[in-house]
Structures are given as structure tokens and as C-alpha cells.
Length: 277
Ligand code: FE
Ligand code: FE
Ligand code: ZN
Image 1 (cartoon, rainbow, N blue to C red):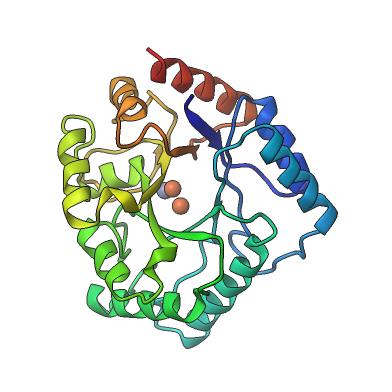
Image 2: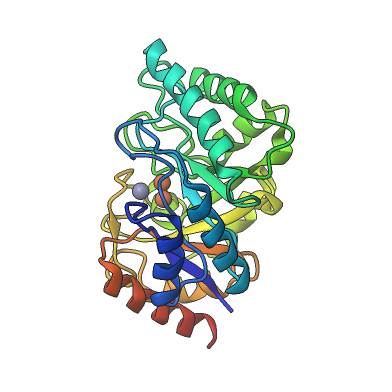
């Protein structure tokens, strides 16, 4: 069975997210570990967390893919922003232990003119500062579209970060289909070629999750505008190949398409159907 879900809001608590996921046919989901644009994190209610843990176990959920706030930039030119990235990630990783054994995905960062080499160094420094040998969470670097000065739009850049991290056993990669497409990887006409390149440069054993989004823009546009499944430049046939691909089909798939809950339920149903054909 395809492991699929979407991004859910934490506003009604953790247990509620589990029930909401099940109600739309999902068996995984994503959520922001704190306000995606600000920095405040509400303490996790242990009873609420326990109800979600129980739900995940009894319903046989695949690993969840939590998302770090967008504002987190470990390679900013502003020392306060780099400090926030460190504090927020370290704190999120402690909080993630309320739900052991899941994934924590983050955007590697934007080097804002310092150059990609410096960006890679600063991101690796942050990971070296926050990873704990005893954590049960795997931290995922997300593949980026290469908008502005984003680091991580090339597989080589992600690998360069991973190589500089001491506790790299706790690292993996989340492949965002909109982002890799916008970065110039042709997953529409050459999915095998792209995954082969991922394997040669990073290693497919690092690939832990997929953000499954169509794209409003053309291959290599470096734009990062998500579209509903089948309504963008990636298209439904490519998604059928993606959810059936032997290197991908067992991973958690997370929808980040412009939708409300009923739209997500429909995309989940569609992708489950495509995966089982
Ligand atoms: Fe993301
Ligand atoms: Fe994404
Ligand atoms: Zn995106």
C-alpha cells in the first residue's frame, strides 16, 4: 500500500492531526514543528502526544515527515538568524522525541551572496551543533528548486553537506518533485536517469521521503510554485511512474499542493489508484 498524506495544521493539536489524516485516507502526514514564519513553539501536551502515538501505532502509519519553519536559515549573513536556526532546530529535535522514530525535514538554507561553498560549510556546522547521537529522529535535507541563492538544488550540494557532518547516520534526503523539476532534473522524461544520478552522488539509501507536488513552471525554471497533481508541467503520467518506481514506492509521500482537505483526499485516492495499477 502506498504511504501517503499531506501537510496538516497543528492548531487543533497532535491527536487531532492523526484523526484528520485517517479521515482523508492518509497513513502519514507532515506538520510544522512551530509557526512556519515566526519562531515560537508551543510546548507539546504529553497526553495529546500519547493519543497520537497510539493512533499511529494502531492504524499502522508510515513515518511522519515534520517540517522545520521556512524562516530557518543556517547560512544567513545575520549572526542572529544563524543562532535562531541552531536554537530552533535543537529545540525541535528535543520536541520530536515526543514521537520517536520519525523524520524532520528542513530547507538547507540560502547563502544570500556568500557563495554556495560558504553556505555548505555553515549548514554542516549547524547540523554538527544540533545532532545528538541518541536522537531517534532522522533529519532530512530537502532538495530545493534553486530559487534565489538556495543551497541544495544540486545533488552534489546535498552530498557535500552530508559529508561534512559527523553524525551523518542521522541524516537523509527528502525529494520534492516540484523542486527537483524546477531545478532542472527531468523526472518527466527520465525518472530512471535522475534517480540513477541521485544514487551515484548521494546514494539511494539516503532517500527517506518524497514531497509529491506538481509544478506551475517549466523544467529548470528555478521558481518553486507548487501545482495540484496532474495540473502542472509534471503531469499525471509522470506521477504514475513516480508512485510505482521501485526506488520510491515504499517511502512516505507528502502532498504540499494548493488544496483544502477535500482536495487532498481526492489526490490521495487518485495516487493510491495509480500506484496499484
Ligand atoms: Fe519544504
Ligand atoms: Fe517540499
Ligand atoms: Zn516548494
